[in-house]
Image (tube, rainbow, N blue to C red; front, top):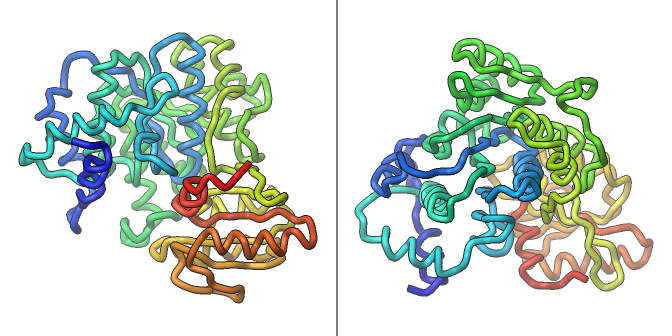
Length: 381
């Protein structure tokens, strides 16, 4: 089987309206014999924003500590293999193809994310990974990653209003679901506030899980150096990862290396094209958009957001700094002035022409899929 055929099969696996939950993933893991035997020790990263950043810091810390390190993250930007990494390197195409060849006719049912999780955990076990960062998809208790065993610590970054529709529009219901990722007796590190913190405190008390709240004055969350990833919001993400590493017994050297070595494309990611600075970012909810807007006073905005992400609410915090506005895929049309160019490369060219006139950067945001589409073109210096 070719890698491209395996990718097509995986991407064709859908939930088809079925409820979210870990049951399908658990059935796949059981069928593959992954409920017992060798497996990595896991840090489960849950939350609305910052999950990918925390996972990147953890991955860098594990690698620096000299243990065999794994990471399962989403979404990918250019190549599906980015989602599953061992010692910082994406798995090989042949590993994906061999997995799909074995499971395609198994009769097991699962969505794309279920199968990718199973593939990741099988690879981690097969390659004798010691520690892995496991990033949740949507939710907590209702997420497929709850099927994984071996979780030693949970990081719940925060609880925002993304994916509210999946929880009846209730922030409290969403918060309870994310807090449901807490396992009995397993430590939890969080920067959640408000409803998210209340739900987390209740869950942690109920199951006897030690809870560590972000406090920049607490030595547990101390940052011995500036984090490698750009943006003031990375201070919190880095501090959560540092606290997690310390609680798990990793050295201060590993903490330092984590802060220095983390890499995460398309998060306040500064590139150049046609002599213009282009900032790629995947902000796709209002909280992330506000944090992004605080980092850049003025820019020419290229915006594309999926319709189910309430694009108008994501766009609103970005308008004040926008000198010009171009909408593109995956947006379906203009939301608030601006022009619409469905092809992302041409949309970028329109914004870059404006940027060449006044020297302001181009900001591309609204969706990680949009950033990935442009990265795949190989445009940037």
